[in-house]
Image (tube, rainbow, N blue to C red; front, side, top):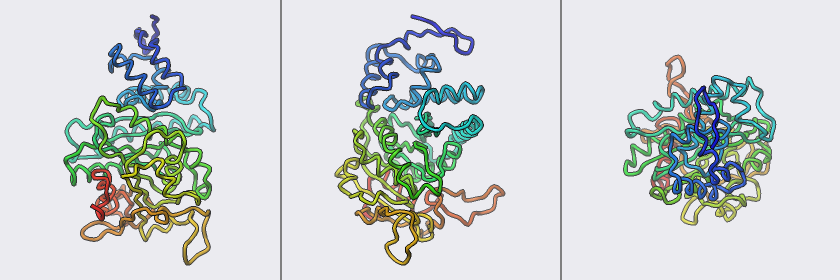
Length: 403
């Protein structure tokens, strides 16, 4: 056994020397292998939360980004790294980046993203309001790097135990600095699922899991193909880490906005994907690669599951990257609309007391910063037909028009 000084206190490092932990830290294991190694740790030595907290920050930084360990481990690890980054940005930058590949954020940008993440975590406790069951967990997962960009996820609900799990991916221009807006959106899915289908337990994750393109990069598949393995790893990690320790997942849904759907479609076909998901929902999709077929997507979607899609009539931006089917020759690529390959379409047009989505945004608050009602309504804004359809898929596996 050896010791190290962290925050002025001497900490036991026996856990850090555990052979199974060392295998996890090597970065050479698949997500199921990581989960198996962690199971071995728990069964042989019964290390708990305090033991994880006492690990060196360098170890915690690796665990924070390692898919396949339980969400509670990633949460402890990620929060410790986040705290260091907030108090000592240069040290936090080194912990997060190390020798990671890609074009890293400048330190000033890193600080902005870390501060945005911290603000989102602080405010997440109030995002689900009265609809949140007592003791609902807010977890920080997957704090790491993809192609130089910071990655992170915030789960509303216990990702290790929830019977129904949803993961939401954003599109162009998304970053950890703005993750709070996405958390607002997934909070609406969470609340609608709790309100409409109270029999299940829910966890919905807003994840910035890849380096997103700018508007001018949306026409290219480069960011999507580059993101595929990272997205596949995160999705696999959730299912692998749960193992047999808790009740099995009843539903595992993936939601994807704009270019997020382009990247998710690539991930669902990636050779590294070990587990399938139940259902995939695209909203305002920027399209899939032109040669994508419904059979291709079955590599990542269960035979009993479905691909769902919606696009608001007033979302004039979503179709720009897709080769027009009628009326115009203006497009950025030959990508295919999910509805062209059999996606079950549901409405974002409101009616019957529900709001109509009228912009391409994922989420727009009901009131602006001055307290005035907003004229804009995003796909996951409160009270929209699209957010309620998403909640139905999370809770039942089906949109309301096929229940």
